[in-house]
Image (cartoon, rainbow, N blue to C red; front, side):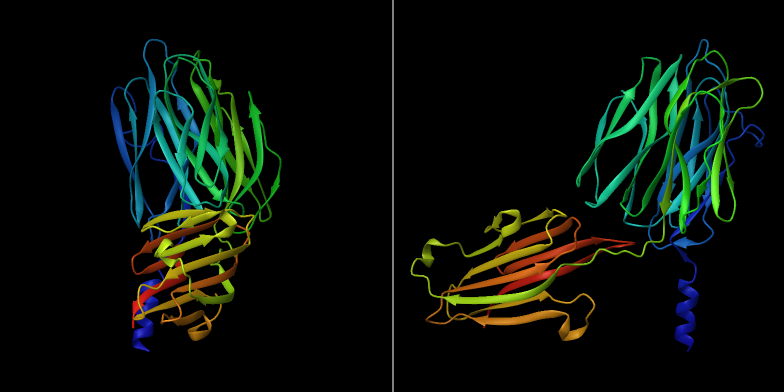
Length: 420
């Protein structure tokens, strides 16, 4: 009972998501006068600790920036550090005054979400980024910070999204933009739910949307412009009931409404669907004597559906397309002597334990047999399968990487070449 109590005490503080508003970079905050080289770092503390370093999403929701007549206007935002218990964010204003730059933030620990930070793009041009999760299906580009010395208009979009990379396209820009900062927010199909995309040149109130359970409501800037003739002012506020949510854009006092495009979406943080390892449902063993075995490789792995053959020592990651839900795997081993055996294990049942979880087999070389063939068939989910295939002089392994709430790896095939 004492050990159980201690375990509960140690684990009850772990969180997987949290969110809030950051209000330290505002006009009435003590000591905030963001101009002429001013810099300030703010610290955000989570209410509890994460088990892993979370992904941080930051979206501006109030901007009040003085006009540019002779100088550059730069608002530089940097994520200085992220830990299990909080993160630090810094603002720098080298020239003209930034009166207010208020933000909302979200922290989530989930392998089905990725965030790419591009906080100082210069020159401003389309750019490609690698992604880790091959099952990423949706992506949003969110403008975070910028620098300009005259009227500007900039729009960003995702022009390509594959299982390995995402490409951000700059739809419009001009020479008055000095640099651009943004985040690319990526998620699997079930994580991101697009709501609406609205372009405006004056204040408006959005439609009323039904709330989505276990989700954050996020509003990002895809496009932003300014005439430079007056103070850039723009605010976004959210109204919520027990069942609905909507937002309003705002402007106050003297100044100019910044033309913009807002993308609203739900970011789900509690997902029941899980990616599971491939399961072997049938095995056939063929032990044979090949007269020309000396012309064959020492071993060979053949995966029929992806048309790939491996017969050299090495390791690589292979993505099996989501359209493939049945895999035929063939392993060939040439017996170098009668004192060898082939030990094989295949993942059989994800929900089982003990001996029911895997196939566990042994096959022996002897005088009338110089080759062993293993034919295994696997069922697979209809998603992209991330397989790490490793070959050594002593065997072959296939490990599947599973990116759910956390990233895990599961061995789906092991073939060992052992001495008797």
